[in-house]
Image (cartoon, rainbow, N blue to C red; front, side):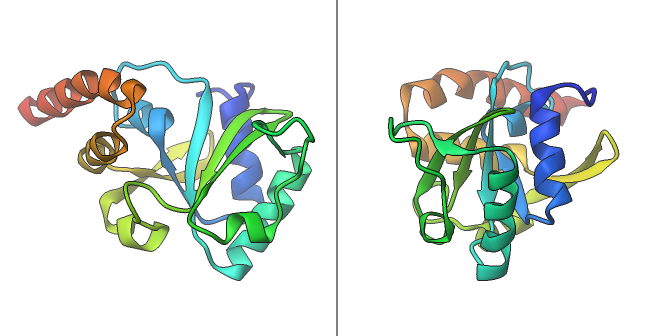
Length: 161
């Protein structure tokens, strides 16, 4: 992933601000070797006051606003401390910062199902493929069900190699 790709730049801002996060969603699928396309970055952030403060600073640096609200509201700590999802638009692209995944899984409860890899000089933590499949199954949205066959085939292929 070259540095000029906006998703990499989004990661660089988060890492640069010391945000503790796990990549989930489509980018996690790609990092796990699944042949899928995605245009946004989904992260599960750690919901501690210190980390949320760093996340707010990172989001401020990239001009983040809620994309589902025409008032262009900027996220603050109270938005990010809860279990909900902050669906954001930034100058670097779409970023969804999630307080939980599945039903109530947090950063700390999924941490053991992650791995770290280097992307453009940064160490990035991603959700492991089996847990990503589980999260997609639980989410149950049509777009999640659509990608499940690809994720399962990727897992099967990795098991053979």
